[in-house]
Image (cartoon, rainbow, N blue to C red; front, side, top):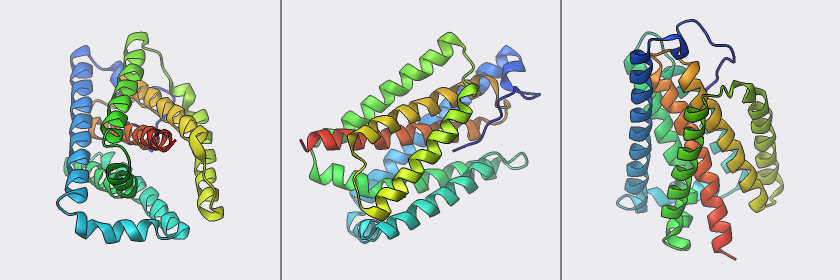
Length: 239
């Protein structure tokens, strides 16, 4: 996930003229919408027209726990690189390359989950998860915009929560146990915290030329929430 400073830095959007601040927010959310649409289109292409070519990759990703650990490790490394590129102060092209790289990485890591959801559960599961995720995102975003509260104080909580969650995921993969619905609910709450944190950062902490990096951070939080909303609905659908 993208990293933020808790104090409002010089040239931050909170200190910018209102016209520049409004333009930055519009650009950020336009890029976020574009990232979500690009992700959805890429997943459709991989799971429908290119399904036969994609299946071997999905099989390799889920064939063993250690294989999935490698995938997660690569995803984290790619996410770090993508974030650094998106924060480039010298190249707009590199910023977009970072956002594009992260979208592709998310699309690949989502493949096994979406494949199972699309072909082995109710056809309503994915659309329902998408709508619920967007509703939660809208509600949390509205909370920040209406209250204008600075949620940067959540940084430490989210960092600890992220490390605990990653540790549990690694243990589940290595020792072969299921984290269950309670973990999915907890991760949805964690993703909600990230959305509050990054939305607050969009309003106060980013520079007005960092709309690509801001969109990437929000997209990462939305993707995290969508993953666990979908997992939760799939678990409930099996009961």
